[in-house]
Structures are given as C-alpha cells and as structure tokens.
Length: 324
Image (cartoon, helix red, strand yellow):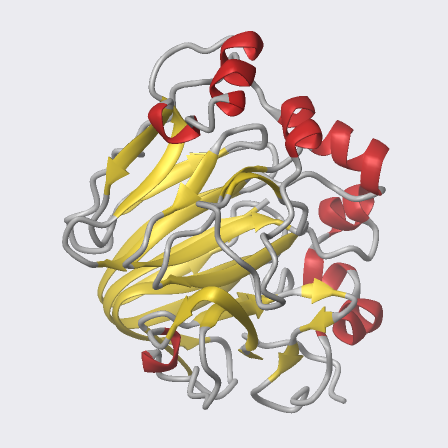
C-alpha cells in the first residue's frame, strides 16, 4: 500500500428487496445479474457490508482497513475526535420498483439506548422518477399521539401521511422521528447516518419472502415519532449558473451542497474532513494532484480523503458534496 491517499471509488454492495427492480444496473459501474436489487450501498463501513476500494493502489482494501491505516488523513482530525474510527455516513441508491413500507427511524438517543447504535436522519435526491411517482414525508396535518393510535387501530395510516409528487432533481431531508416512505417508480440517492434501524408501521399487508406478513414495529415506532416536527417540505434550491453551488442540508449529522460544473470546478476543503461526491447529472472527472483521473458519471460516488484539500472536477454536470 502506498502512503498517499487519492479519490476512492468502491465496489457497490447490492441488497435484494421484495420491492426492488432492475434500474440500478443501468448505472455505469453497477452492472449485476441479480433480481430485485432494491439498494446499492456505495459507501459503507457496516461490519457485514464493508465497501471495498475499486480503483488505484488501494484496490481490494476495505473502507475499515483504510480508516485503521490512515485515520485522520482519511477522515479529518475533528471527525476522528467525534467518531473515533467509526465512519459516520452511509451512501446508497434505492430502486423502488414497488413502494416501500411506511416507517420511521429513531434519533440518536433512542437508538443508543435500545440498539447501541446511532440514529438515522437521511436525505433523498431523486435521480429519476416515473410519471405519478411520489414519496411520503411527514403528516398531512398536526397530529397527536392519541390521534395516531386511533388511525393505527383503524388500519388507516395512509389517510394521515403527506404524499409529495416527485421528479428528477427533487430533494427531501428526513430527520429521525419523521414518518416516511418511498413510492413505486423512484430511483433515489440517499445520504444517511451510518445506521440501519427501521421501524415499520404499515406495509400494505404485504407478504415477505417466507410467505408471512413482514414484521411491524408498532410500539418502537410510537416511541420514535417526533410529532412536533410534523410538516416536511421539499428542499427548494437554485443551481442553474456555471459553477454555482447551493446548500441543500445543513444538519448536525451532515451537510450537503449541490454544485453545477461547466468545464472546470475547483473543489477546496472548507469543512476540515473528508467529502463524498455523488454525480446526479451528466458525466464528470475528478482530478487530484498527480493521481490518475477518476471518472464520476451519473449515479456514481467517490470519497475524497481529508488530506486532499483541493481537487478539480472536470466536465459538465452536477454533483452532491457531502461533508460533516
């Protein structure tokens, strides 16, 4: 292994789901022969789902190996002080050929107490969407816990959630404690805390692969809901100028900007740690020092180590920059 880091791409990790489809394999570095691929984990340090480097001298090394080897050079000093050698984010692509369950994720306090893990706040960027596609985010009006229990007992959850029609380029931030779901016909890039805790509250009476109804988590969900934060709106942003940048999310768990590139964009570190870049439009190239150019095409993701404080993004398109 060499001692100098460079922009890292990883081999996707595929998760087959009963609601998954065939759309992820259309992304340039995501070819596979699996059926019903619902998720592609593109940057992950989960113990059972470790991302493995796909490019350069570190090819074949897991993200965990690289964290242990490089530490602050990869993550950044402040991030190591906060998270140790834990990688704090998970980046995935979701192909919802069928609709996902209506669900909620716990916040950090609940997740730590019950699961010894972090909570799960997340952001969605819609890569593509069919006509009439929608997502669910938030309640459609203020709701008390008693009102919710009444609707749950009446099997009438769908009447109280808020459906948002979506198209490519739409963005939603889903804080932990928010009721949400992805409708069918959506291909979504998800940025989230490194957690995989989900409490289902309604699954359309669907059967799992074993032929039995999928498990619901009614009591846990009731504990997790943040009924005060009931209204969730689409994130409005403007990014239509050459080399323009717009902030999408500025949360304690992660920040996300969208950048439009026309020819050359100089990316300089202003966060003091690693960045994750995901191309959401066009075809780009990441160039850093004397390293080989790293293609960054639509739907692809690259990790920029903390020690690379400056690099160039070449081409025409848009990318998300994720940082802490």
